[in-house]
Image 1 (cartoon, rainbow, N blue to C red):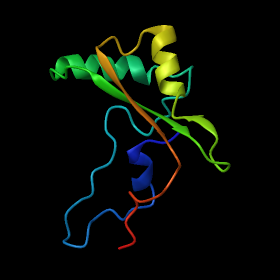
Image 2: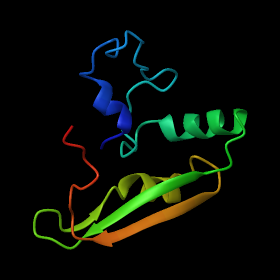
Image 3: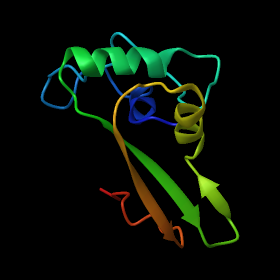
Length: 106
């Protein structure tokens, strides 16, 4: 239930150099786990329009008590069920103990 666009909701309009920080355009803020949404279909249409070859689906399976089992699996399951976006895909599978080393403290 998270996209990178969500990180921008509380961001200022301009960065520290005075340049505008981009915001979502055609698709707006969206939730790829929402089965009632047509965003995945629209993403596929945009991808084809701009010659995108496919999508990567991130699937995490955590081996710890705080985040047990699958995470980020809903978008992949919906795509397999409804066929959208109708493009090739790859599966990025990660099975590990959750560690926030990707988050910067600066």
